[in-house]
Image (tube, rainbow, N blue to C red):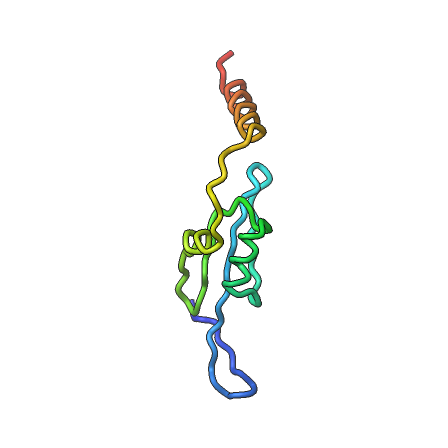
Length: 107
């Protein structure tokens, strides 16, 4: 796959495109990939730290052709503490397990 490049009208030189893909997991509701070519790494870190991006599956940096997984780096830069499961999360998990057991039980 060729890298995405464009000619800068001011300088006449070729400039590489760089963008970030943030995959957010909504559980049963699915996943969403947030891709904004105008966002910088600093802005991604800021959005993670502010809580705007939650339940992150991964963060990829695409520069030229290679794709790099930078999830751990961004999370450490954002200095997010490890958040333990709340009572509501544990209750939802038990409901899901009970539902799965009912669905697969023999008649």
